Image 1 (cartoon, rainbow, N blue to C red):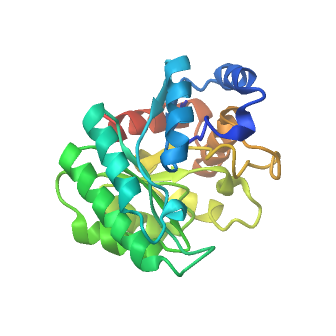
Image 2: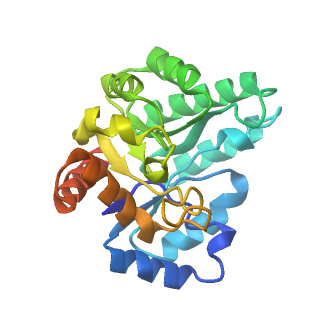
Amino acid sequence: MIETHAHLYAEKFDEDRAEMMDRAAQAGVEKFYMPNIDHESIEPMMEVEEKYSNTIATMGVHPCSVEKKFEKQLYEIEDWLNKRDFVAIGEIGLDFYWDKSLMKEQKEALKIQIDLAKKHQIPIILHCRDSFEETYEIVQEMKDENLKGVFHCFTGDAEAAQKVIDLDFYLGIGGVVTFKNGGLAEHIPEMDINRIVLETDSPYLAPTPKRGKRNEPAYLELIAQKIADLKQMPKEELIKITSNNANKLFA
């Protein structure tokens, strides 16, 4: 399995990171992609990447970290992108769940980071909480042959999924698919399996029956099993296809 979205550097893993990584390996997770949050998460993320050879850092500013004067953070991101290679720009996007007062700044930061992705010809990892239509609109407007990516933590219906696929983007499916009233599971059968990648968003959004606890990549197995059941296919086949999808996404 390939874990396409896990914050392995989060403080919640500081006490048992080595054990957490062992559990993930035992569950069959072979590769991990780590989306950045902001300037404060870069150093701990790089330390994890250096320690574990199967972890891969990405670079970006999360919408919840976008402030009135966000330009300085983006200069730092750009500096890192010029310093070394990254496989993606992320985690970027829009989040109107907590606060809508910085909608303008979030949209501007998203557009600038999409331009950086196009310049470096690498994919984007999109966060779009309570903002799918606005995020989709910006991506659609800026789409060209150099822009691809994934809508992380996708929770929309089959129609929204098809809009993402039509952009030549992928759907990041995580723990929400296991929630009884999550509203996502019923749409999975209609989604193109060749456009789905697996993620946990650890340490957040643990799948059932671990819901409410700290999430970790070992639980990716639970997500894979749920999607396989909904698709009425063997879990091994589902894992093979989604891992192939992840490799194409981050190629």
